[in-house]
Length: 240
Image (tube, one colour):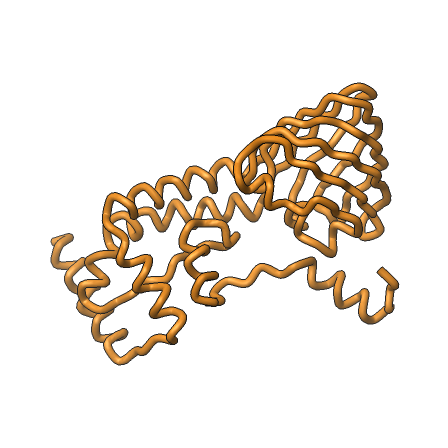
């Protein structure tokens, strides 16, 4: 009975999609990712799934002079004052390793200002892709995480610790989990009957996203900043 239902669903999909066409970027992207061997598809799927799981959290431990606190119940509501010059070991934004950070920041809500210099020492390749300098209002840029992130950072005079949780990555991990059967078992049968399924990647961090960039394919676009902050900035002409 289940086989009959699956056959019925696939037949319906064939009828629905048989008259569809594809853009050139999507065809190039689809030809490449659907052309992966099953062992590669299997490895990439589970690797991206695991990375999406650990990306939900970030944890950093630092040594050096640092004093202050930042409380962040989302970037819109964050408040604090923090100064530090520390060496850190941590996992944040898809990157793991040792690095040196100098930070001067403080404020409340949308007026929270951060000046942070980052120097990678040793770690994963993503660690060396992060900007070496961030100076501005975090609500208007995504280099320091998503505007919905929740967490805290505390400077303890000779040490520092920070931890954050990302609701967006929780959702992304949930979607990735739901897509596991599709990516592991259904993608090849669907391709055999002419249906090319897109990857669902809310955070644009999975392996297929690098293929999308290669073909200049735009599917899910993540804004560079919190859109309402940009609108208000234009209305008020705030000089920053």
